[in-house]
Amino acid sequence: MKKILANIPPDSDAAARLEEPGQFQINRVEKPTADWLAGDSVDAEILFADGPPSDFAEMNSLQFIQLGSVGYTQLQGLNLAGRGIRVSNARGVFDVPIAEWNIAMMINLVRDMRGLVRNQESGTWDRDARFQKEIRGSVVGIWGYGGIGRETARMGKLLGLEIHVMTRRHPQPTGPDIYRVNGTGDPDATLPDRFFTPDETEAFLSGLDFLILAMPLHPENEGIIAEAELAALHNDAFLLNPARGPLVKEAALLNALESGQIAGAALDTHYHYPMPPEHPLWKFPNVIMTPHISGSSGSSYYLSRVWDIFAQNLKRLERGEPLLNELTEREVAALG
Image 1 (cartoon, rainbow, N blue to C red):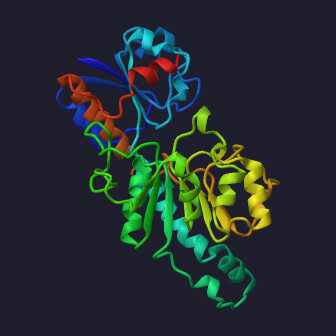
Image 2 (cartoon, one colour):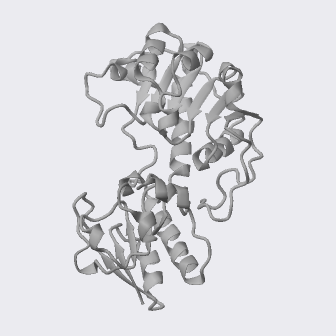
Image 3 (spheres, rainbow, N blue to C red):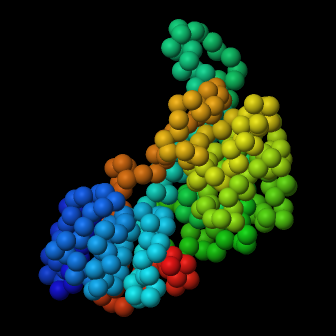
């Protein structure tokens, strides 16, 4: 019987299914903090958590880590490659809520929902045409075409949007070893109307009504949206960033908003956590700020999905099959 240490809140149905056959013993620790301890479960062979316990170095029997997060930098410096520990993340769990955030923000921006709310608060009756626009027929540029980009494209096509995608190479079909909520996304990468590569950046940006960032943050793409990229957008275009704040140069974004170079922005990821109340981005009437909640563990579907990934991976481990969302050897080695 394999011993599992779980520091993810239980999804009762999934946990019960795992324990029924008697193949696994699940010990739960409900201390979601940076300094939690494995304690009596230090001999666990499988870890299911957002990050490692403080006594991780003592977990000498560990073979596999299932993360409850998509990001995995919290595992840096643990010598996972040297210890032969495999890792899977929660890729795919947040595709739906972040794609829904993208759609909601486009509608809210183009109809100036913030202006309507201000009018409501002041009792102002204003039926200006700017409150009556629609997004149908708009050109949406998605920079990056992973799960979030693909689900945004699927939802956007249903609303009559033209989808342009920027990637380094033509996207491949979603493989069977990547987690995807049934019925979502673009598994065969056939929905976009046009694909662009980095050498076509200006052509990609100049034709957009909305630019959505859907790429992970790496050292090589930090600040990838700077003065030149924002200037390539036309003045009626909006920027949406549910990915990572530093993908966009802060000063360049402020300048573009102040000068009217772009029409506005919706930002769910930021330069400071929390964003200080005096930061100028709060004050722009054409900017929607949300506190990194477009996709989060507060979702009503988060636990069922992340436990679904974990349950499937346990079965795959037992059968010797490829794991869902497994980090490559190179990715694990890069953690150090």
